[in-house]
Image (cartoon, rainbow, N blue to C red; front, side, top):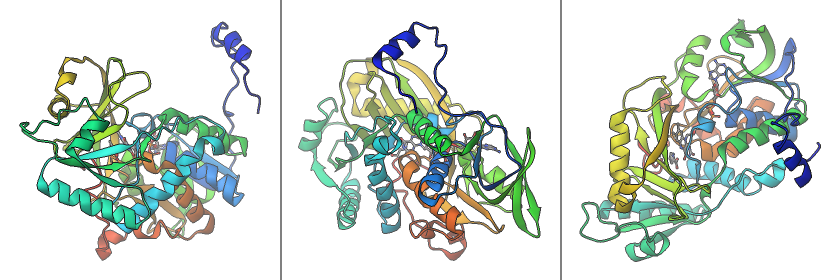
Length: 417
Ligand code: FAD
Ligand code: PYC
């Protein structure tokens, strides 16, 4: 694929953005594919990429109702970490983190993965007990983690108010040095470009409106623009709309869809060079390379499909941030947005076969799926290729809500859901 030289970039910047090379084709759909992926977010695109790259299956369509990466992939606050409590989740998220560590090279596309560390701050004795338990569990799983005291927290984040006379004094934190942030759009674009180059058809502005069934098995999808497109297997990766998709296929998923919002400030000088999260005061913040403070908190308690925020949630979020960083009270907020996250009862994802043959779902990532993007795509691709769930995916079957084998990660999920 052609690469732009420095001169090329200069020429194009003066050329009113004309004649840029397209990153992927805009193909006409075929009548039938080996695999259809519904949902062109990071997870769907990563699935298509690994199916083509690692399993040699290239007769694939990714069907996206809007534009690629325009869902939660482009709306999240990009925190990447793997410090989950239970073995099942820790293995899955660490698998993803290892893929993150080589992703820019693998895609030959800079996803700006910055391992600047992530701390989860504790404000009570019980917080610290939970932190110690989780860090110990992480280390037993070979995942990097440390328990910091208040003094060490202050050394890493001098801007945080660690004085002990606060309403929520900082007692310490868990610290994962390999955690960090990445450029979310680039992740979608890198996977899309890579998949397209191997022959995957990326069909944008095409909504899946139903499933084509024969003898209780799915044999294709119905679309609003191209009629029925047939496929041997269909993988649904539609995040906040997964419940709607399951209803179209005739079953219910144990997920609820909630708005989750975030906001960014005006750019300021570098003040925080890591990621700070607090489950207790319930907010988190990092600083982008541009200088914006990237801020968020928990879901809106009401279910809904509106990709926007609500004032009570913004107020709560800002209270939490100012509690930890009083000096940020003078920073102006620039913009705010929301995405629709699909939450499960145990705050763990669903990567699963379904009651419908040949139909697989990858969803339920709630507030925390961005960090899993490469790992999720990798294990889902293997599951779709073989028709059997990958070992790392098996604990995340949708049927665990019948069996009771939950993977309760509410403590590690970071923001409430
Ligand atoms: P999406 O990117 O939402 O992709 C799903 C796609 O399916 C969408 O593009 C949608 O248009 C498409 N679709 C839906 N229905 C149809 C249909 N019928 N036909 C065709 N296409 C359809 N996670 C983290 O790990 N770290 C964070 O810091 C973090 N912060 C977050 C902050 C916010 C404000 C939000 C909203 C989420 C955050 N998350 C975070 C969660 C993370 O964004 C998601 O878990 C992850 O991006 C999900 O990726 P996805 O590819 O499954 O979904
Ligand atoms: O899962 O780390 C996370 C997260 C942070 C903000 C939203 N999700």
